[in-house]
Each structure stands twice: as C-alpha cells, then as structure tokens.
Length: 146
Image (spheres, rainbow, N blue to C red):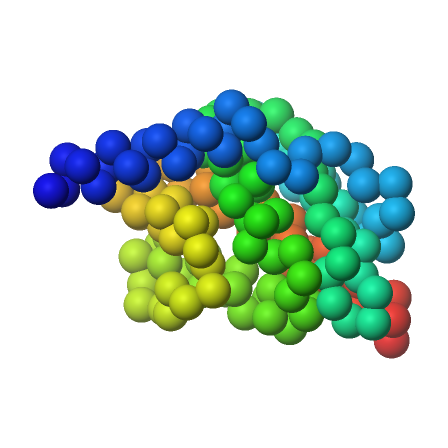
C-alpha cells in the first residue's frame, strides 16, 4: 500500500513538472516576485493579479528541478481564487508541513503531496521556493495597497 501511495505521489509530481499549469508571464499582474535559490539554482518568478483582495489570476516562470517546477504548478492550482489572507495561511501551512511540523492540510489539495519532502532535507527548499515567492508577492501587494 505504501508503495502504491509513493507511486501516486511520483505520478502527480512528474505530471505537474512535465505539464505545468499556469506557466507563463501574467500580463495583467498587479504584483510579482522573483526568488532564486543559490544553493541549487532553482528560480521561480511568480505573478499575481489581485482584484478586490482576491487572487484572480496567478502564473509563474522559472527553471530548476522537477520538485520546484511541480510545486510552482501545484501552488497556482491551489491559490487561484483565494483571498490574500487565505493564500498566506496556506503558504504557512505548506511550509510548516514541509519542515515536518504539525499544520492543517485542508485546502492544499494535491500540493500536500510535496510536503513529504521533509524526508529529504536537501529538497525542502525546492518544494517551498514558490511558496516563499507567493508570500513575498502578497506582502508587496499589501504594502502597495496601504
């Protein structure tokens, strides 16, 4: 059973890496954030379009390993349509789970699969880089609104 579950996780990750969702440079972005991990070379550029406090559109560009690209793709599918506060909460939950800490999994959808990366400490940054970009983009958006 554990083997079947591991195969399912791998299939979802490989699918999102090979066929990323919401990949591109969002022309209508109201906020964007570029994050680079110098230790492994992963780069994610996340673009958000926020309308009335809600993430109406989200896309990303970047390069890196399978995990970082799959994570960015999964993030965009989970976050689109959420309020900025909901997105921040989900980013915090994802990061905590990836670090092996207790946090709710509700709302993370298939992205919860990547929280199993805690078993491979060198890959935690790969899985969380897009979530860091999300938090920074939202905080920038909130500062500009204030």
